[in-house]
Length: 349
Ligand code: SF4
Image (cartoon, rainbow, N blue to C red; front, side, top):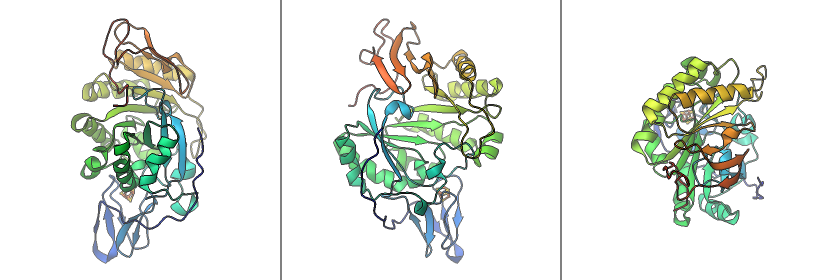
């Protein structure tokens, strides 16, 4: 991981998309299911969409607060260009209110509270290529809330053959979904729990819109996507809940969507819970495998379940240590022993 040296400058005001004017100078932002109604001089829940004189502006546009080079496995994506580097960007703000946020220094900050840099969309592919990256990731905070910037970056990146990745909570409206995801190649979606109680109390949002986004990804796009479930002791690690989550994925998204169970560490407002014991992840993984999911991983711990195994003959296909690929035995996307097809994007086209 390398911090990039980009000159710090003040971002200019960029008018947002996906809003409509209301009475008394208010605006309605319909980018995400919060549907904020924002008064003059106010910002939406996400901090970075603000009403200036009756129009909505995107303060995150051209103003990333984090720029880093990561392994693609850190997103996590295990079936998408394994072993490659991804140019990763994030801004201030977020449209969820997760008490356990692990990037709260930027996600819970306003634009004027972060060390933002001025990076025009057309600069991004050149920075990424200069760092040897195969793809761009919109990550760290919730990228949906800076969708205008993402769209322009994707348009600038496509001529260079760079792939594009959303690391997202899936909280986006149907009205906007295709505007963004028609330009995206892969996504990791946080399915943070499988109860409305957890979403309501711990993330200050709702479960159903996230499930709706997963169905859109599955049924209306070719986007390669994987899921992450961060397991927090006593809050979302009940085996009954895990079974329901895995069965919903199997029934609605199919057996080939990779699922990552990852370990929690105390952070932000959730410091009274312990780290997730490895046994919890092992148990969850077994439940998901028993439910019929074929690619189930464990993350944020050292585990053999970071490897990819052939679901037909059982041999190890990709060996990983933490976020590093140690060996990749796939032959043109197939198992070298039994020739089973392994779903994923294994080569940049
Ligand atoms: S994107 Fe931000 S301003 Fe728009 S509805 Fe969601 S939280 Fe509110």
